[in-house]
Image 1 (cartoon, rainbow, N blue to C red):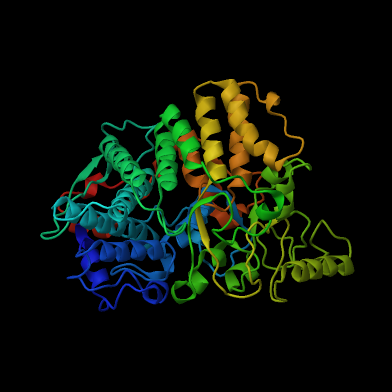
Image 2 (tube, one colour):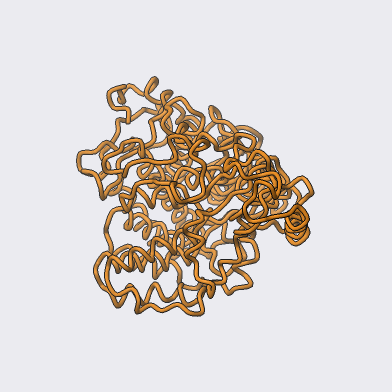
Length: 537
């Protein structure tokens, strides 16, 4: 892609292709096979896709990027740190502090901006190679090949959507026909030409075309091997996300219904089990993390999970917005996933209340203070080096707590699709349909949920926003939700520290504040003859 469009070739020549057996697929870096073989058969194309599945989470940096920003494992919590969904309780060891402070995505030379751009274009380049190779002819169309083509088109759509909602003005709040989007690159192979920035509308049109093609291919395809593989449900899920971000409400609703078919909502036991496996019933798409390709101290659970044995979590347990938590009804079992009265044991806590019962307003003596800490440590399997903090999260729990062992990463759940449907119907002002959709989730989580309370569009949207903040906490949606809703960022009542958060403590709404748009990497502008400095965001 563009400056690094050669990434595909470099990635697939890193080691010699050794075979297609099950042992190889489970243990070898499958984004690294001989270039001459990479597109020679459906089996080898499938290996390329396996490389992308692993790239979603693994510490396998592409040329020109850094392992410290590895795939969605990094960007899911990064987007929630910037969007205010996941709050840092202290400076910790520095990881994602600049994200929360709004210093990283506004810096065109930052590693985070660079990796988000070039990793997504790596996915696009790999998808292009597969799609264009089959288009040359000579391949026998089989259910297996349809599966490969469906995944390639779905990956390309997903990657372009990630780029366009991040590096361009939001479709709903902008002028999509004229606003600058990202370069549309659909070719593969030499001479690896660069491209200008296409309009937001043109990029969305390509995304929609790819999703429709993916769904068509999946309809006559073999079944996915597992939830790491892209599927027709995943394609419908992305279609719903795309339509929601565009304001195409009916499509968003219809696609959400199709996406969640066959993926029933979790019960209380499973919801509170830690979100550490893609085997949960409502997981539509996720990464099955294997030991040989995890990224340990750069993994998703390292950033998000209070029990992970890393300095990021021992010193900086992540907390929920306290105003959001306090509004969760006592009859809603999700209230158990955060600990509002956890003692503030970190003397470096950013609210200035950490270290002992003398400073923590929830405790009046050290015995109760440290007994409460001990109970949490023993209950959840943390180490004695872990600090606790009021409103800390226990939504994400390791299978083997207190270790650095890998756990799965979830990218899409059916509960998100229920909320997509509810929002779309609310925006269509179909009050009854929106109430019914909202009740699917509300009644599953809260024994006293009453859908009839939400009898206007405004009331429905207020509740849908609240439900997304609770249900999808830590799953990477808050930054882009703010853009879609044109909501300002205000941490005044969240529990975040203004001293720690700096510029990220308060930001005006996206329609009047271009800092919501990420900077184009400076390296791209410097090397792409079609993008000038004047076209920087």
